[in-house]
Amino acid sequence: MHPGTWTSSTGGIDPTAWLEKAKGGEASNQSQHDSDREHVSIDPGDGSAVAEIDDENWVETPSGVQGFDGNVPAIGPGDELPHPREFGVPAGEGGLRIDTKRGMRIAAAKFHHYINKAAGYGIGGVREDPYYPDHPGGFAIDIMIDHFETDGGQAHGTEIKDWFFAHRHELNIKYMIWQQTYIPAEGEANKMADRGNPNENHFNHVHITFHESPFANGDEPVYMVEDDAGDSTGYTVRGNGCGTHGGTHHDHELEPGSVPEEFVRWFQLGAQVCADVDAPLLAAHNRSRASRRALSAAQVL
Ligand SMILES: [Zn+2]
Image (cartoon, rainbow, N blue to C red; front, side, top):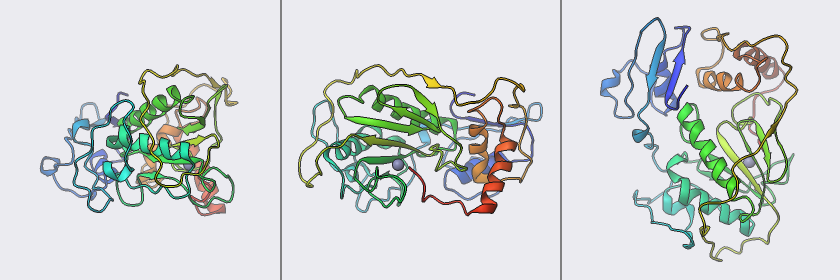
């Protein structure tokens, strides 16, 4: 599939309503021609429904930043970077290390148009985490992706990941996580274990952990990188233990209504990670997990 399309072959899920809901609107029976959120066309064709999103109209998430007027400053190579709020991106810099603060500001300046700007999203920094020191210690940021449920949103996250990976040395990056893949600055990337939802599996945000640097005091200037070329964007992903036996199950579809609508897309993405895992299997696994404990963002890295 190319970015901006989503296909259902079951007919059990209405992609129009789903897309509307995914974009923060109401899943209503309103005609798509009345919607100014995106252009959606439905092609019944051979029973499959295809919804196309106009990327140009994607960034309509209301800013969660009070007073943001929609005008963003122009930032060039080597320029001093303002606070993320200047780009309408909710973010807090308290407790961040200098290199982490720089990464946060660069993410806002360069990729604000890809970031979910709703209140409570934006770029996460310091927060409690009983399992990992990255966020409590001021080493890590979470770049929340707008419309991550779509292929286009996934492509935006990948673009952010690729850019930071290319600049990992000058930005003092230790590792990143995106699409259930742990990506160290050095060495092989590898698929991570399934944690059961798109947040914990990093399909809705790019996580970046920086090497240790001094705490930011709040007013030291940070700058955009000078050279946009960066280092190599390539890395290899180590096998994740998926066997090649058993064939593929990508044609298996979720039973309509078997998972919450907002998770359908994620189960489909998760099913692409390993040839031997399909969406219904993931959904069954998730129900099993959910029965043991409530899904929570507490363990998100
Ligand atoms: Zn994180």
